[in-house]
Image 1 (cartoon, rainbow, N blue to C red):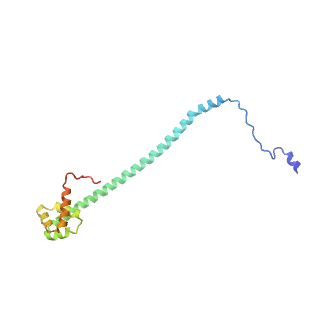
Image 2 (tube, rainbow, N blue to C red):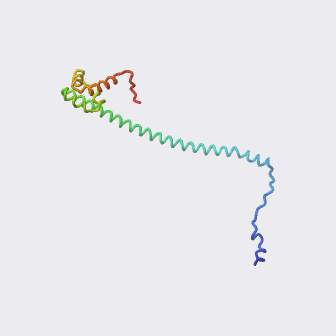
Image 3 (cartoon, rainbow, N blue to C red):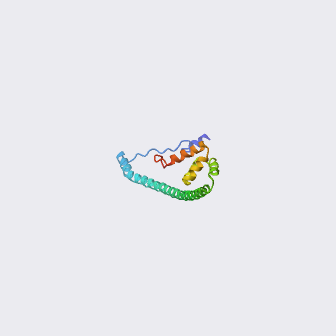
Length: 159
């Protein structure tokens, strides 16, 4: 049996291709590499340009989406501000018709910033009567808020 295996050439030996003695010299190899370098570089540039175009399209799509959302938020904010102005005007009208002692009692329970805004929009005589009817500490808080609101050195931009 061993004799049979020996008769098959290369049964156990691997066929290894011997390196082909190249006719090309290292100059030819260098020239070949130099010749294809520009084409390879151009191909890389084309691939990079394509990738950048795809990225730019994605960025443009996101910008469009964000602009749409911003428009929606601005519309919502405008509607909210319009509602608050209407509510504020209605609230001021309610306090205009109230007696000073009743208005003072209610404004003492309201957020001081809101109370100060209401007092500022009322006629001066009525505002002074309401502040006179309030507890001194509450009236002082409102007076401080009102005076800081009219201070020209106070920034208009909240930050």
